[in-house]
Amino acid sequence: EEFKVSVCVAVFCKELCFSVNKIHVSVCLCVETFPRAQNVTWISFNFKTLLTWSPKPTNYSYTVEFSQRGQNRERTPLCIQTSNTECDLTTALSNLKGKYIAEVQSEPVRGVSSDLTEFPHTASNWFCPFNDTIIGRPEFKIAVNEDQRTITVHVKDIETALLNGQKQRQSIRDIFKDDLQYKVYYRKAKSSGKVGYDCKMCSCILPWFQTLKYNGQCRIIK
Figure 1 (cartoon, rainbow, N blue to C red):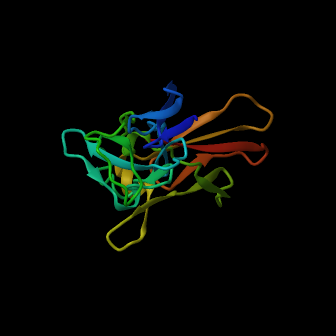
Figure 2 (cartoon, rainbow, N blue to C red):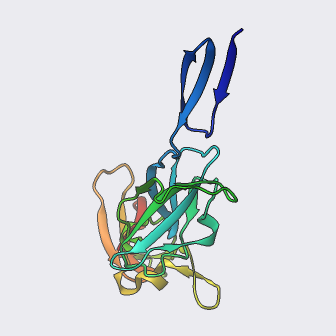
């Protein structure tokens, strides 16, 4: 008479099969581990800063740790043992000119213990909100002045994802202050040549001739 015995302990296993005295034995050799996070990337637009990674976890979770250069690691409550593949660190990176690094750690799901003393983790590149966030395209309006020889370009400062002490959204001017400068370009219609003017304020006056049509654009320099 033949018997078959199967032994399996964990999820990440390799099955070995053999026979002893007509008893078929199937044993899963198991080493407890979790897949490492991949493609750990910073995404930041108008100071809305996310850390993203892959893949979507199955039977495990992720925890994000981050630190400013020279300081201790920190965690944010919403990114501890999470099944998400992104973490919003907008408010956590309080020193906008600081340089930060983050690690995504693979861990058991909540309520499940582990014998591992160190979990698999993947680090990001260094990131500085002040230098590395992408600033969106500004809105602007043009008005012809009474002298009919100049125009005024009114630029609207972009709002960011950051709040001030009164819980109001800060603009890029609130953050960059004297470092903020707009570069206003304009040119004759159907012409490849263009003229650029530096504009430190929200409004700037440019020369204009009524008999010509102009196309314009506004770019941020910081």
